[in-house]
Length: 181
Image 1: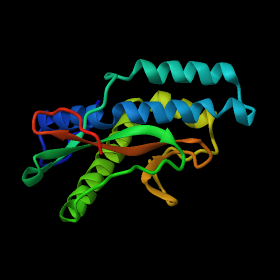
Image 2 (image 1 turned 90 degrees about the vertical axis):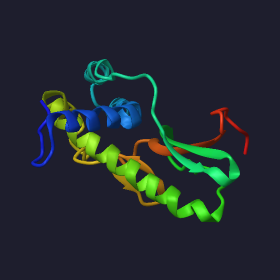
Image 3 (image 1 turned 45 degrees about the horizontal axis):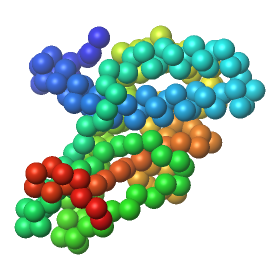
C-alpha cells in the first residue's frame, strides 16, 4: 500500500513509483540479491539466502532499466544515463563537453533521489520480506542506500559487498542509435 503525501494524488504517487521502478528497480533488486548472496560467505545459512533471493527476484517487475537523458542539441547527440550493477571501484568513463558537466551532475543527483525514495517505498511495500532480510543480515544497515565515499557514483547497502549500483552512460545520435566514445 502506497502512502500518499499531503498535496499529492494517489495517481501522482503511483506514477512516480512506477517511474522510479523502471529507472532504479532492477539495479536495486540486483544489489539486494548480491548483498544477500554475501551471507553464506559470512557463515550464514545458504538455504535462507536462496529463499530470500527468490522472494526478492519474484517482486522485480521489469527486466530492463530506464534512463535519464541529457540533450546536447548543438552537438546533435544525447547522453543516456542509467544505473547498473558494477564491481566495487568501477569508475564510469564519461567524456562530456564542459558546458554540460553541471547538467549531468543534476541528473545524477535526481537519479540518486529517485533510487533512495524508491528504496524507502520498497521497504514499506514489502515490509515482511524486508524484516526477514534485516534479520538474516543483522550487521548490514538496510535503512538506506548509501553513497560510497570512495566512489561517489556508487551506491551500496553493505560496504563489504563487492557489487555496487553505479552510473553508466552512453551517447546516442539524434535517431537514438548508440554511438562510440
